[in-house]
Image 1: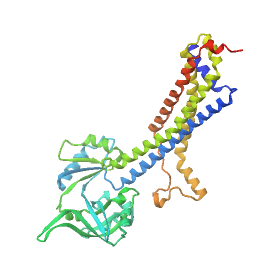
Image 2: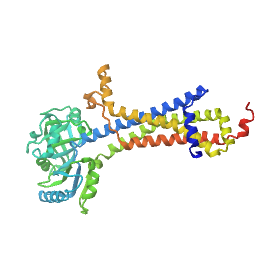
Image 3: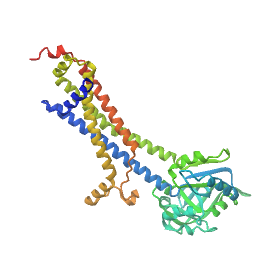
Image 4: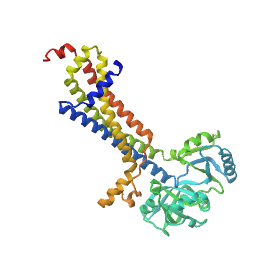
Length: 419
């Protein structure tokens, strides 16, 4: 019975109607603040996870999952051999291999009039299945219009807007190679024609241009060779784990996943998530200070009760447990309420925002600017557990000082002036 006494008294203090209305107000305020902080953190983290997933999904429409390059390059026979080797390792694996295609890419300078910008030029075979994803995201033109010998290019929508070009316009391509002539050394340049414009709604719209792979080989003076191969998986989000299982010991091959190529972007997104989480954690910190204030006032209000319990044989540690239980009860109620409310809001946030937009006529996210029609949200159990666990730890730490003060109350001092 004595072992359950702190729990019984602590919960009774939480449920009891106190004569001090201010103490009740502080406890209720701390409960609401804790619920608000947990709710805000879960909703914001879920929305950021949704945007993260959306951006990655759009990038993967045109970015290869895994690339394998070699300084000596690959001929078609080597590519076929590598494809056969990877295909034989595939069965029984959780991630299957979708395709292995030749890769040809280089940094180039595209210019028109006084506008110029650096982009990544990628060679593509319009006849292969790997070109289907690009075809699905074409704004104007068609991938099939990339014909060998025509030196046509497909630009991203942001790149086309920056250069102020449309289908049929001419551009100048400057390659990172030079031509040696009797008149001197000159950079290699080529006039190309815009045959299509694509849009996936990510940074690749401003940094990637596609050309027929045969034209790319001619411009880069590669002959029939390629710089490497592009590997597409059934699940691109498991590319790193797949690479650990299939990376060969050949030191001449360089393996890179799409997460390596976009590492700066994803690092910035992770940092943004951490900063926003820390800022919103201030709400939970306010709730913790309110728990401290309410327990300190409760200790002052219950000095007589503490003295009586101590004279009946309760130890200082038992008195501390009583107030720790009371503080944790308030914090736990706020955390549970905030978790339920936060998960519900995060799950239905897209519908809620859509309803508000339809009623008010004001669009928070203009589809023509943000390229999304609904607010994305993705609830991760790991994030929810971190928020709940952190809130519980903060609530527990907030109870220690008031509980220590309660344990230091001397029965004789508390009862001396009692009538």
